[in-house]
Amino acid sequence: MAEAEMGHTNAKVPSKLVVNELVISYENLATGEMTEAVDKVSLDIKAGEFVSIVGLSGCGKTSFLNAIAGLIKPQSGSIKVDGKPVVGPGHDRAVVFQKASLLPWRSVLNNVIYGLELRGVKKNEARQLALKYIEMVHLKGFEHYYPHQLSGGMQQRVNLARALVCEPEILLLDEPFAALDAITREEMQNELLLLWEQTRKTVLMVTHQIDEAVLLSDRIIIFSARPARIVEEVKVNLPRPRTPRLKNDAEFDFLAKKIWGQIHTTAGKKVSLEYEI
Amino acid sequence: MKSRNHQVFVRKFKEEFESVILGGGVIVALLVLWEIASDLRWINPMFSSSPSRIVNSGWKMITDGSIFIHIQSSGLIFIYGYLLAAVVGIPLGIMLGWFKKASQALGPIIAAFYTTPRIAMMPLFIIWFGLGIGSKLALVFLSAVFPLIVNMQAAVSNLDKDLTRVAEAYGANRRQIFWTIALPESVPFLLTGLRLATGRALLGVVGAEVFGGAEGLGYLIQYAGATFQTDIVFVCVIIIAAFGMVMDRSLLALNRRFDAWRGNGC
Image (cartoon, rainbow over all chains, first blue to last red; front, side, top):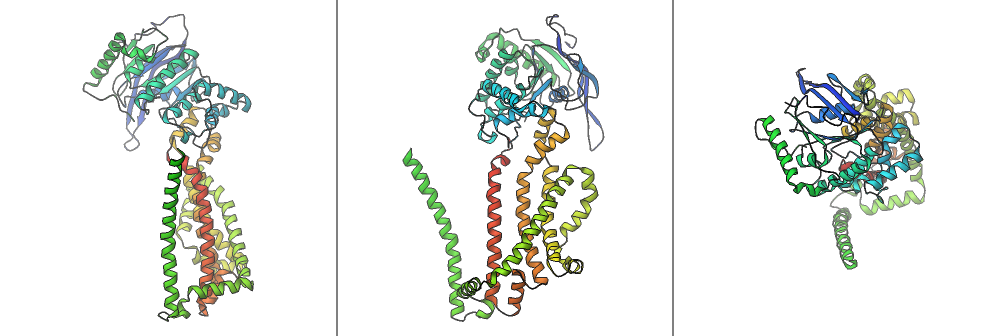
């Protein structure tokens, strides 16, 4: 119903990411049939905005994010970052994956440097930048540790630092904390809040944790079941800076319940939202 | 705290010690049984030798220096063949894993070679390369090269999808993926390949020397066996087994260093 409900954010702030009628489909290799994952989704994200996409497991939200990252080619439609069309992965976007996927043979420092190294940034400069972001995600002192020596939460911090150090225009988060236990997840949500306050990056996050989306976002976009369409956009007007304590707030609760209800209506049946691994 | 560490240490030491006692004990018991059986003529020492005879003849061959010619001859063939296999097999395997066209072109012929017992080709090698070191090197090389090719190919063509996706997301081109993902990820496979190649190369050395020639441990085994000098056969077998074990353990120890990051796939 709210597909056209865009541009309600302050018109003076320039658009960072504009997605127009994006269609993504997969070919079934066995039958040759095309399955539609995302169906004509349009989206406009302003600079400095934190936007989350929530939806059922397998609804196509990760495909949507991957298309914006330039990792998969959409069937039709367009993606523009700062007015420039996206044709593949680029320095203006950085992805934080659900699995930390750190290179196991590289130390924390060298993992964080990885993106800069690929880009040909000078070693010394890359190092300085990396150290800054390692400190920002509170891993100072762990620069020379290897991934297998770190806990899941710490690995995810490295994953985050690896993306931040590239200083992208848009940070793409693909269910970044889904693989963590509840306590670590909460800790990381707080961490992300603080980081966002410091950097004010444009963020697009995909999640199935509704409370996570409400806590972090300025705007939440609800995807329908596959093929994904935008069911509704919910503005989160909770004051910033936010803390996880907000989860006890009545308005927080109201928003979370509203979104929960919306997703359930689109599913037409009761489905658990908590697990998607 | 300290006493706890101490307790852990003592317990670990006991466990280690017990396993050494048990494993070693069985070997010692069998050796004693063997010695008694041949001393009491339950078995004929001409056919089955005995531990004391083996030690005696081993010691004699060491003191008069006769064994070293054979060890040197076999050792050189092993080293040259093994190195040649590594120099050819590792890059070739990587190439086959990385370029689909290459594996399509060379895959069938490699599969055919891989499953053929290489010793079956020894008469041909002798015709082509003579009875000297040439034919032996050919056999050792062909024995050792395939495990390396096959392992490197498997490593490079089955990269962790999550890692390659990360590389792509950060803008890596194919060349960068090769150097930053494919090569480091294939190190454990390389060590496995080298371990397998060790066994195959030793088999090749002994096989080649049994076939012909006038020196080497394989030749000595064949000659001593034909003349019923079973103790010499045992001495040679023990030397080869010991060398193989040392080589294998060293590579395994190296491999362990990489296990930490191989298993948990973070």
